[in-house]
Image (cartoon, rainbow, N blue to C red; front, side):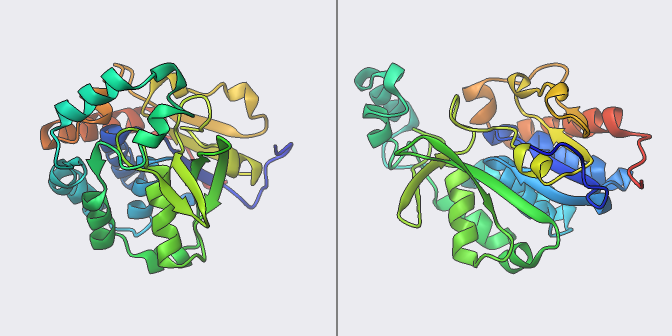
Length: 281
C-alpha cells in the first residue's frame, strides 16, 4: 500500500456493488455533478453495479445514467429463464448445500444462474460507449473473483478492446446463483463483491496508486471502511444513515419506484457529506 499520497493524483471515486441498490449511487453521482466534484475525479474503482455505474458516469452524460435507472433496468436486468424465479430459488434451496456455496454444488448451478444476462448486455450495448471507456483519461478499475482459486483480481479497463471491457463488466456483476459466470482469457470469474473472497468497496487500486482524496459510495453498511487503515489519504464515505434493504428487497429490487427513492436518498446523503469541501488543492 502507499505510504504517501501522490500530490499529482487528487480525487478518486469508489463505487460499491449491490445490484438494485446501485440507484443510490446514481443519486450520489448527480450530487457530485451539482457540487462540481465530477470534474476533479481522476480514477474510479467499482465492483459489480458500481463498475457499470462508473462506465456510464465517465461518459459525461448524467442524464443517460438517470434514464437507465428509471426506465431500463426494471425491465431489462432481471430477465428470467424459462422457469419462474420462485421455482429456481426453491430448487436451489432444496438441492444445494449452502455452507459450501462458493466451491462445490452451487458453483456448478450458478454457471447459468437464475436470471438471463441478455438484458444487462442489451443495456451495455445501448448506453455504454466502449471507445470512450477505452480512451478515457480517468483510470477505471473493476474487480472479480477467479472461481477456481477464489482469488480476487483487479482489472484496469483503460486501453482495452470493447469485448474485453464487456467481459470484465459481466464478470464483476456475475452474482452466484443470480447470474451466470464469465470467462476471461480462459479463466472463470464471478462477482467481485463475493463475500469473504471479494472486495465490494474496492479502494485498493486507487489507494495504492496514491490518490489523496478518495470518495466511497457504499451500498451496504457492513462495507464501511476503517479509515485508519489508509494513512495519508482523506477518505470520504457516503452511505445511507437509514440502512438499506437486504437481498430480495434491495439487491434484486430494480423497480422504478424503488430506484427513484434510492436516487433521492443517494443525492441527499452525498450533499450532506461532501458539501463545502474543497478538492482544488
